[in-house]
Image (cartoon, rainbow over all chains, first blue to last red; front, top):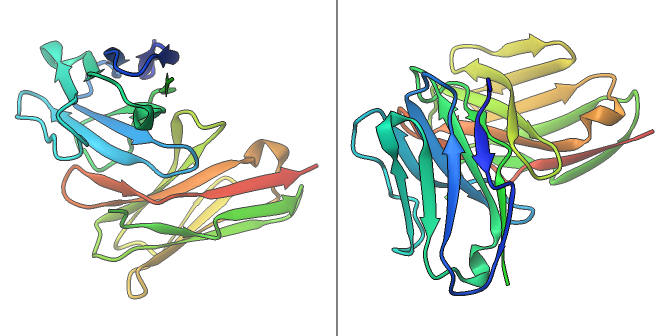
Length: 114
Length: 110
């Protein structure tokens, strides 16, 4: 497809379980971002990938959160030992050459931790 | 921490009326962007205004930027029910990171 895709669209899990969220950026986009959005809030930056450079992980809230980007394309955000406070919408975005220009967002994954 | 703050938090208007929302930020920027979000899902880019621009138009949208006051406004003219959404401003913190505000929720009543 032409846009950013994310899967699953919804994920319900039990506290303590691990979850993996996937993002497929727009083909050719070198920059990829993960954000978290809690109910009624703005976007919280989690992690940034740019080409083969070391990612900026400064927004990851704890060591339970990790992300990978394989082959400079698909990215996976992993949350280990999920907690109820991890419940949120996780959004992925990608951009082309200039990273502070338009970001193209996926539809998000709504994570609910019971 | 959030660099941009939108005002008001919520806005309810009648279809056909104009909607204005504001964004204030703290540090100098290279550009400011506005995004729309429907139903808590992905954001859609609306418009980008660079620091050397004062006003920009796109269809029924008008954005202004006042770098001396560190503020921007988004005006939606002749609103429609489909404009019901949350609107976020985003400012660049460095050469790759954006900071998003908490958003303005706009409800357009038929």
